Image 1 (cartoon, helix red, strand yellow):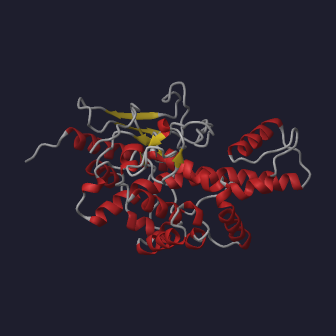
Image 2 (tube, one colour):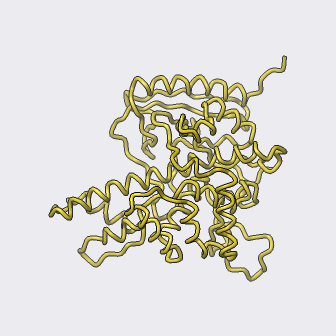
Length: 368
């Protein structure tokens, strides 16, 4: 009988820890997905941890932590400058077989998610498996890519939804004559700054303008664009720069220069430390850039009518996302239909399940 390697052994231990975590979550209630950035992450009576370590540098090193629903600080993705670390990110899963094992051990079943029978585990990979392009089975490659990216899109939307709900509640109170307190005012000013809504000195930001911007990106659309822009995670930009959405930057140090770009090309494809940073930047781009004003207006009309966000219809307002214009929109709609992405529109993240690293080290880039 073949002896299991270090990675397989670690994943086996992780499976047991996940089962323990799920059982604990049922008894303890929902857990929070974020931890303080500084200080002892395991401090407090509600925390337990199982650390899995191996002597091999390429082995899976992971920890599963349980936290009861306590008043823990929430780590924001949208900081406006730089990136925010995401506790819960599995940085050591770099290859397809590792991702496949981890998803299986966590009970991550895409068919069950599509059918509404299962939530999506809070498994956040730091990068798309670097060897996806080497998989011979097309459906396996597609499934692994969607399983990797879906939790990240849902996490970004989850944060946006929290801010939107708070903003709607504040708007209702202000219309009833209430006055925001100092902490609420600071939160509102910070949110307005992140979403590019300016206010005159001393005045409240325009809440109607903010509500146009602080809203989710349809899951099917976010998936379709990540598929098209990254070639199902196989492009050089995805492998070396965690870039799934083809966003541009104008500093050579901020990204990767396209292979066919001339020496005088001004732009690079923006790189990110982790894939979730790319998803957050993409979402903020659609929610703030003037080129997507029509997209936001169409989304607001759907909200006002009380209808679900229609990914295919909203894709029609992204003509300026690509130089291909209408052809690009047609491609997105074909991707959505061919891969039944609309079935994932109502997917949600599981509560009470967090997988985190014992040691968070930067993901290696450029592996093949």
